[in-house]
Length: 182
Image (cartoon, rainbow, N blue to C red; front, top):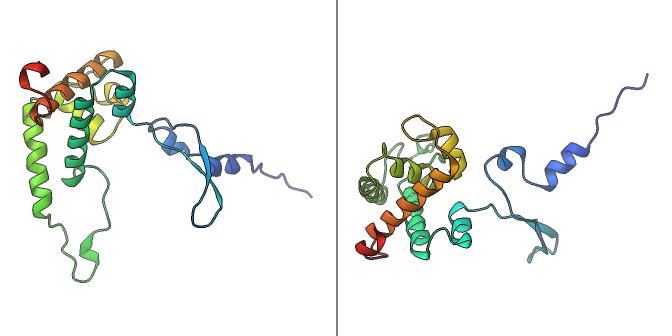
């Protein structure tokens, strides 16, 4: 008896492009095809769409606001506040375990200072920057899942909250004068 064969097209399609899991976390640009400089093998490069980059390209935010978002994102990553974690060092002989470095402590202080300027993590601006810039969720995802005060926020209002928060951050980081940011 001949059994039914499974179609291999779905696995072939998955290997060509980003996985289903990655696609649910934001869009990608079209594939740019080139050759690997070391091996000469043809490859397709896809870039994830950056929320702040797209907003700057649309003219929604200024270069100073974009830079302020980049500063916050770097500090957030340095503070190890994102969900990405490395293998626990406690399992490595001579590893330090859950110790945090002085650099991480300083970065956490800078993130806390920025969050304080935004009104804290319970404020609309603080929550939006934490999730959209720090954790790199999309504005729409934050508005629908997290929102503010447990309520969903329309995507257009959420984008306005992010623009206002980035303006405050730009003034906080000294990229624009305080009078110009208001």
